[in-house]
Length: 319
Length: 305
Image 1 (cartoon, rainbow over the protein chains, first blue to last red):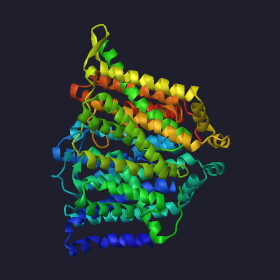
Image 2 (cartoon, rainbow over the protein chains, first blue to last red):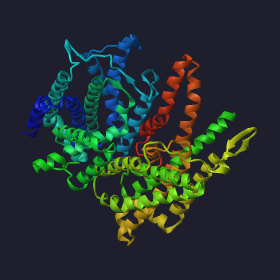
Image 3 (cartoon, rainbow over the protein chains, first blue to last red):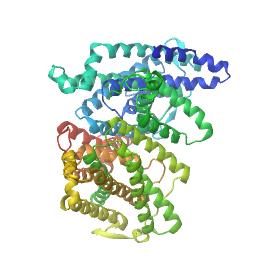
Image 4 (cartoon, rainbow over the protein chains, first blue to last red):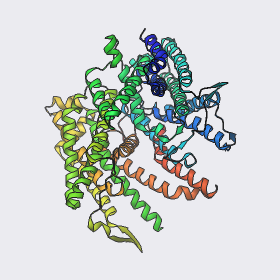
């Protein structure tokens, strides 16, 4: 129900911001959709899988660098390891999703050998490794990054250079994944995953290979986050290591918690809350993240079920 | 050979700096099983206070004392106001609450000190060099950091292995409830350990500051490096923190020195420097990968709970 309300609100939001003469807010709405998608995929891992990943910006950044690099080489006319570049999102986005899945298999495969604080620290460490690798890529401007402003936004035959068109493309992707992920968490796979979270010993005794279920969830999540990263670089048309900064991982986690853990749609709500807060607070102070910190403390200490928990007044804190 | 000796000393310097940060972290994990992302902020507090005090007084010793004390006080306040509310919360809440502290403190230092990077100048005596190896002059300040690191190891070793408090710390790592049942005030013990860890992190922030541009978030990378140390060394193990820090300090420094040249043997110069720099920046994480594969609970860690 809440999911339908959130999606419906997002669907009419561009018309609304144009009606109130705030058309520039459309890019903010697009960012809500993109980061909402990444936060939702993180919720699959944290909320349903009980794996507190503090490294999802690595996947987000990997997606951004896959799509960004292909775009860069297309503009440049050069090749990437012998492959010509392209600006076609129907190529760059799936490429990002595949690369994200591979990276997720590597990082997840290693980190899932541990649990608890080890897992948190290991995911964060790999996040930093990926961040420094992007920093070392001088061809894409090193730590300064590189602008891709000459690139268009081609999605198949559709030209989405216009911000509103691009919003609806991203919205369609988000809506599709809302359906897919909701079906997934209700499927037998989702039930086993929650079982691994709540009582791994019993699941193992029942014959389930808990490591494999967790790893598959982690890979799916990494792949979706990577896709979101590709969508983000197509939106901003600027590629830089900041996509993979560790604080970005923290912020994705904050979105999940603000919106409500283990609800999927909460990730979108949390992303919206954070970007709307930024939009208003940045006029008052450059240090608006100070208030994000204060708000986050308040939510963690006082409202552990997040904003959706406050609205709905039900649901269970699971992790 | 000169290069090797020099870089090895640099590696020890990085290693001992990491040790001062990760020793506090690992003891805190060990006793209270709590993850604290704000430990890097204590490093930052030390560096910033030292920069401020150093600019006013021009006296490094005063700046060092002020930075260390400020971090210890900040740690005490943090423990008193927030951390003790998190003992019985899950790791996710601990991550989020201490991440909130990271956001708050990163913004707060910008509000107080501005966005322009500050700097701490090394003490006057440190401009000098000594000959550590035939015709190899080496900066005294870097040697002083190594000496301070060795002093910290000796102090922590005596504290943890030779005193009653240390006995409680070791007992708390494995049998926290039992320790409380024997009448030890575990909370007070933890507060003390937390303050010591905070002071060490602040101290590390001050001594490392002359090599850094002191700006918002300056402690974050050191925090993450300390996490790698702890994953490699094992949670709650002081020994693990010592060996892990030194090993990673050496690996990182050696890799940055030698890998770009090594790759030149089979790649062209520009590719070699890019690839070499990339692999070098990833070197310590590759060590972590090996440890995760071989012994997921860390080299000196207790078995996973």
